[in-house]
Figure 1 (cartoon, helix red, strand yellow):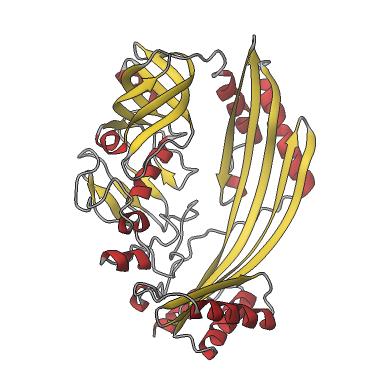
Figure 2 (figure 1 turned 90 degrees about the vertical axis):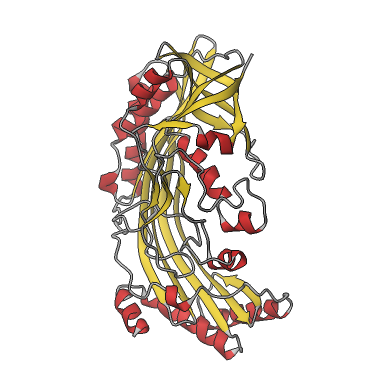
Length: 450
């Protein structure tokens, strides 16, 4: 019954890829494997980069790959190939089997539970090819760059404009009888420019990305936005060391939430390398904080009907009323922790952080005095202790208004305290990212400067 439903869901799958993974699984069974899983993909696309109206790169790319993992009891071996011929697949299975013979038994290894497979999964409308040729892509890039130059005379150079169109198809199958696959597309335009005023220079960017070309912002808007962001940073200076409220703008706020996600991932937890150990069911954010994973958003930038182990995805609350509802687990980590997979093998899918009623401008007004961070540098985050210290740039606020751009400062705190001290989240949610969150106001952080 499950296999029949699975086949209905797969009626539009690439038959070549289906045959390849089915053959790989049959070879694994013939080699004596007690279980096996295979993933296969084909990708193609066009990438153009223009700088100063000249074409720097023009690439057509087409890639493909097959990965096979076999299990002999609790022994595991994996191998990969870019050749889909039967002979190459058989050799890949043989290589994986030979590797398994030399690995130690791991009681937690194995396929995800059969009952959790996405036997009948939805079509999320993720594939919208863009019929753009190289000449058209070059014209779009040049128009974007020109829009940035025309926007402000202080734009004196560019770091390039890129136009990309990507299409891929991936298929996953395992010896439970599950086989799933679907095509996806992703298109983007990005622009980075350089501005100069007196003896100072600054660089900034803007980009747009979407599953469908019609969802992209216009070249004019992208170029103008990149220019505006760049010139707004001219004349940046340091500030004196202080403790003040800090706003993480929506350019960087998703990274802040990303640190939380890494801390509640199964791998960090079973290795006891997380500052949020034993936090399940505990308050980790303010009472009003809510995070929800929405993997089935139509045309969503990170939507997926199942995770990389074939486990069916579904909408669920990660944080509710500030309390952590579950960890982020694949099947292996779940077994190590005595829990169940949360369908997050490969990561989260469209994590939406509930916004508050205010705009970024209202948050700036409310903070009175402090720092708006728009760029972070360095890797000063300790995932075990939660200690946080990173280089930053942004804008200084006095009397509820931006006064001047800031650079060469450091923002520091401890993530555990920072999460609990989030005051508000603005409505300016950035839909281009997997983690969708607006600008975040923290009550207090140390800003180290002069």
